[in-house]
Length: 111
Image (tube, rainbow, N blue to C red; front, side, top):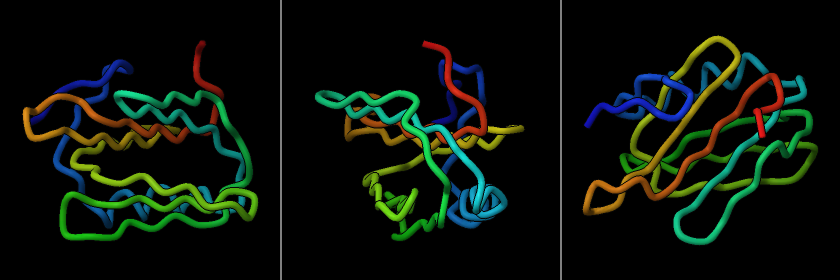
């Protein structure tokens, strides 16, 4: 499945190394995070200094973001897009419905 997200980025199967490399380049910088889990969770423009980012698993993947000493874990990620100033990871359920999204960017997201 290759789709576009709301920001118009073309999604591709998640490449753990590409996600880690892109986020690793921002280590020590302030990032903004959008997290959405369907159903049940929505958080937009949380921000802090990115201490580390790791991707684990063989697919679906888990993304770990250490921000200001805290840890954010997002499970069941399957797809990604990397663009200038933004990394997007999404996860689809067994029926190919969007189940979760995490966007990490260098600028606040539009409300």
